Image (tube, rainbow, N blue to C red):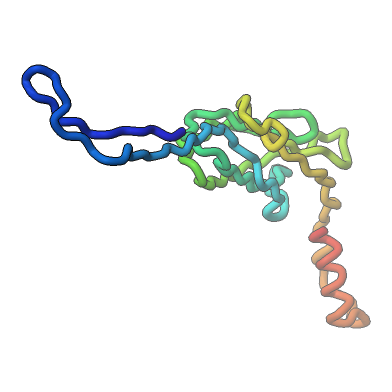
Length: 167
C-alpha cells in the first residue's frame, strides 16, 4: 500500500504560509503471516536395542514466518505410540530445525510396520505435518550367527553376510 504526505506550515490563524512542492510517498509491503511446521525427516538410525526398540530420528522444520511453541509430536510404530510420545516440541522460530530421537518396538504380530511421525497442529500446510516410513522387523540373530566361520568363507562372503544381517 502507498501512503502520500506533504508538509505545510501554518500561521496562528491556520493559514498555509509554506508547503512542500511535491507530495512525498512511501510504500509498505504487506507480509502475510504463515504457520508451517513440517516433519521433514523420519529415519531409522541403527539396529534395534536389546529390547527390540528400533531407533528413529525425526526432523522438524519451521517453514513458516511465525514462531510456534509447545506443539505435540506423536510417533507411532505399527499403530502403537512410541514410549514418551507425544513429545512437546519447544519454541521454534522461523527457519529453525530440530531433531528428536525416539525408539519404539515393532508389535510382535507384525513383520512389517508403518512408522508415523505427526505434528498435532492445524497450520497453513497440513499435508507436511506427518511423515511415514515402512519398517521391517530385522531377522533374529542367534549366537550361532557369530560362531567361528568356516575356512571356506572368503572375506567377500563374510562381508555380504554382515550386510544382509544389517538389512
